[in-house]
Image 1 (cartoon, one colour):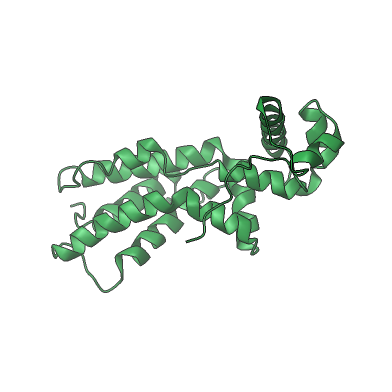
Image 2: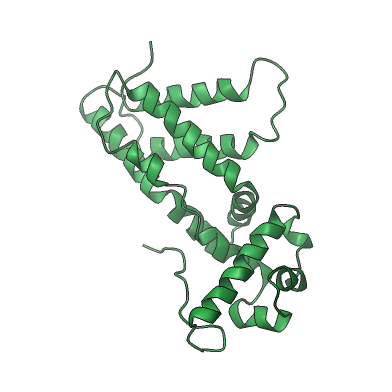
Amino acid sequence: MKTALAQPKQNLSGQRMGAKGLKTRRRLIDATVDLLNSNPIRDIKVVDIAARANTASATFYLYFDSVIEVVCAASAELVQSTPAVMALFESEWTKDNSLEKAISLVKLYIHFWDGHRALLRTRNLAAEEGDERFVLVREDSVRALLMALADQITIAQQAGRAPSFSPAAATSGTIMMMLERLGALMHVHRVRSDITIDGMIAACAQQIATSVGFPPP
C-alpha cells in the first residue's frame, strides 16, 4: 500500500540534515502555510517563502524543488484522524450514545478543517486535479478514521441492525465525503432557506448514527 512521503533525512544536495537543517526546513514549511492563509497558491513565489522564513531563495532549493512540493510536505503533516476523533471509537457505540458520538465526530472533524482550511483546500484541489502526491497524503490523513468507521458499520451489518446492500467501506467513504464537503463549505455557505450549518451537522450525524445501526428516533 502506498503512503505519503516520509520526512527526508537528507536535503536535495544529498547532505544529511542536522538540527540546523531541520529547523530551516521547518521554517520554510511554516512560512508557506502562513502565506497560504492569505494568498492562493498560484500567487506564492519561492522568494516570498524564503523572505517569510528569513532565509535566501537558494536555501529554499536545498530542501524543496518548488512551491507545490513544500505545500505537499506541509499537507503530509495533517492528520484528520485526530486523537480526539479516534477516541470516539475506543468504546462501544450503542443505542444510547451513538447520536452523541456522531455529533461529536462531525464537530471535531469540521473544527480541524476550520484550523487548517487553506492548506486542506489546496491539498484537495491538487488531489482532485490528479497529483498523486496529494492523493496519497489525503488518503493517509483520513485512513484510520475511514477504517474505524467501516469497522463500526460492519458490526452493525453483521448484527442485522443496518442494511448490508452496500459494503461497509463504501458507506464509510461516502460519510467521509460528506464530512469533507461540510468542512470545506462551512465558511462560504450562505443561508437561503432552512439549510443551515447546524442543520447540516445534525443531518450528517444522523446519517452516521443510522449507518452504525442506531437511527435516531
